[in-house]
Length: 365
Image 1 (tube, one colour):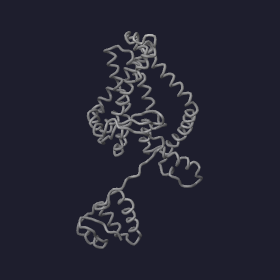
Image 2 (image 1 turned 180 degrees about the vertical axis):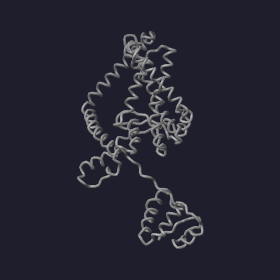
Image 3 (image 1 turned 45 degrees about the vertical axis):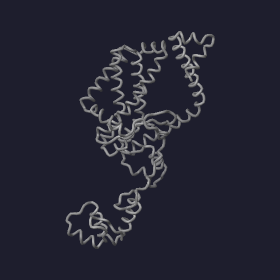
Image 4 (image 1 turned 90 degrees about the horizontal axis):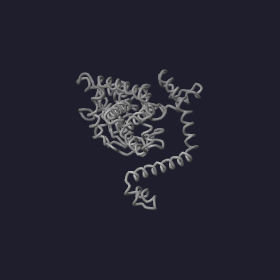
């Protein structure tokens, strides 16, 4: 029979039973121990002892127990790797607190309305032909597009932090890592799991919502400067938003679907769903879900398996040729940028004399 530490020190079951009658209504822990006393002959003692010694004690949840043991770390499928911190948790919380007023409903309605007007004007009335001509005529503008895209991605992560903070949770760090083979930004919003479904969805959608705010800022800058590159950046940001809403890899759409279904890790359900399909009457983990959630996850699994197989197969097949083409494109773009800079600075080009590669090499020291 285990001993339970309460406000009176350590006590046995019999002593606890006598004390409980004098204390009045029990709390949660006291009620649990009272059940143990009442059902002592049914084997509950060994079960509660197992929970205390093997489950609670290793986590450091017992008063006067041993130090908290190191928790096991999960290694989910297709997770972000090689992470580095850009903003620590304290700075991310400050940014979230400053930006969370943007999640008030009047502000959201105004932003969505302005975004619809902006898209109608850009894609139906103005067009992007002027932006294409400007970029083709001056390749240096591609650097501005790339820089603005990076700023948009960082502001996207601030949207997740602000959505998490607005719901009452505390976001963690904002950083960068490698997802599959590409660099990707991330925000630690683990604390949002203690929020309700609406709070988690607000956190998930906060990134694309802040992308929309960023595009409105670019449109305002275009109204002042008439720089067509800003319109091209708006169009590229639209593509980034659509990419983020894809539910097949760990983008925002994946977490939105996960919170809608109520299952935290969809990739962990691929095995149970396939096991249910081939179990032939045996009980599997897939049967533990409610029927609507099980149907949605099954449909997702049937879509994601062939899509990932095709994508990974194509990547492995065409990766060598893609790397060669990418290197040639970057090399040619570098020569174009170097030539454009040299054309803007005649003294630099004349200093090269009969050796035109001197100016190009000096850029890479």
